[in-house]
Amino acid sequence: MLPLGVSSGPKAEKYDLDSYIFPFFEELERLGEGVPAYDAHTNTYFTLKAFVCLVTGDTPAISKLFQLSGHTGTYPCRACKIYSTPYLNRYLTKSGANKGEAGKNTRGYYPLSPPNRFPTQVSVDQRERISQLPSYRNHDDLPLRSHDGYIHDGEASSADPNLLHTSGIKGVSPFAHLPTISFPASVPFDIMHLVFLNFVRDLCALFNGSYFKDKCLNQHAARLSNSEWTAFGADMAKIESPTSWGRPPRDISRYMGSFKAEDLYNFLMYYMLPLIHRRVSHNTFKALRRLVMLITMAASIEIRYTDMDLMETRLNFFMKWFYDSFYQNDHERLPICKYTEHCLLHIVRDIRNWGSASYYWQFPEVLSFHAAVY
Image 1 (spheres, one colour):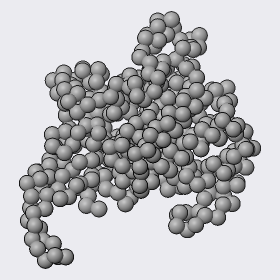
Image 2: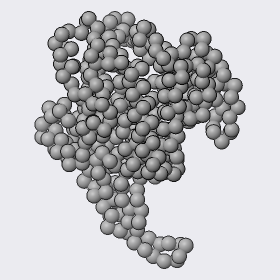
Image 3: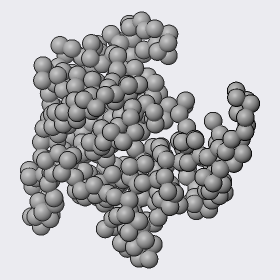
Image 4: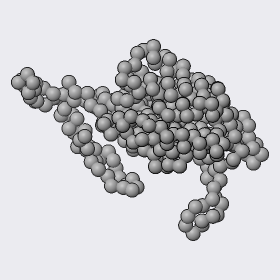
């Protein structure tokens, strides 16, 4: 790996990132024109040209690089312009001088269709506003972003920061001015973070009944009882896996908090289906099988055009089952419609553009910036 720079943690510094990577763009300009290079295999000199055509990273990193509002914004998605549905979140303060005191804030969630069932505490005016939000049948109906639209929205927000709330774009990234970058096509979703580090954890929280704060909402088709979840984890710890898969499986009911991406990858791809078989309903198992087959095909080294059509079908069926089972167009269930779940709708489109998701995921062997060398 050739790191351009390292920023110390634990929190992100508030700095002008574009100014730090400006020397990188100067070097890209030189590489685009060509630099002399030597081929030791043929004992000849040639002109080497290199172009950045794809940028990958987790959502906070991409939001910084391309000046996006981020995953909690009104328009969080870099691929489409889905509008957030507001939800009043109530909580108890966990630390500080106000520890234990009740608090509340408004968060945005991203269902394809706004809820049509509301608790009594939601006012009539708020219900009316939410019911007027756009509704989409599936990902094909979503209003997709374009490169020209990104430039237009970014320039408008640079001139008037208040316009950020109407587009989700703060400004125009220098990447957008590279001739080989087209936003958002050149910024595919990384399934290491999206699927393995985020969605799989949410799926396990649904299994063990800890996802929703209201315990009544955790009663659904994929719910395992406490004893079933404990037995699930104990059975997982007994599995003897090949050493080539990495660390041996551990009890997920006890140690999931320390699971890394590789552990969660192995859980989804190898362990989940045989362990959950007969512990959930047939329809739930069939939906989970579609998910595993979808991700297996998405990460395959070789993908045919007909495979992508099959992935689209499986994605549509799985997402319909997911929203029907856990969201149910119920306002109280909006927290299941996180940005993470929404982004799953776009992964097959990225594969159509770039091939296997394993070419641009963030496992250590892959660089964050991918260059085409000629």
